Image 1 (tube, rainbow, N blue to C red):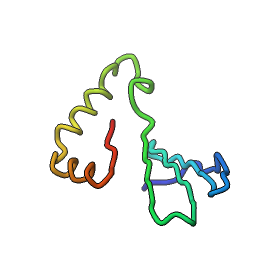
Image 2 (cartoon, rainbow, N blue to C red):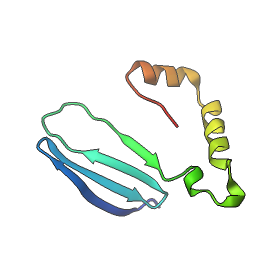
Image 3 (tube, helix red, strand yellow):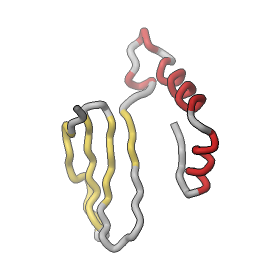
Length: 89
């Protein structure tokens, strides 16, 4: 079961606070609550990549990145980008 390991306010702006949460699967979320805005933006990151690889795993994160984007439906990616999404790995 996914659990929040840590959640804390990292900044406080006039328009609202920003909180960072670390999840048990390594995901990190940033939340900026600004009640006067009607939209939403979601940022979800993972603590993964070459920085976190062991010496015996060098290159595996980059390889997995290519596999994930190879398997995704390109029409879905195009629709998301046309709707304003930014997709990056």
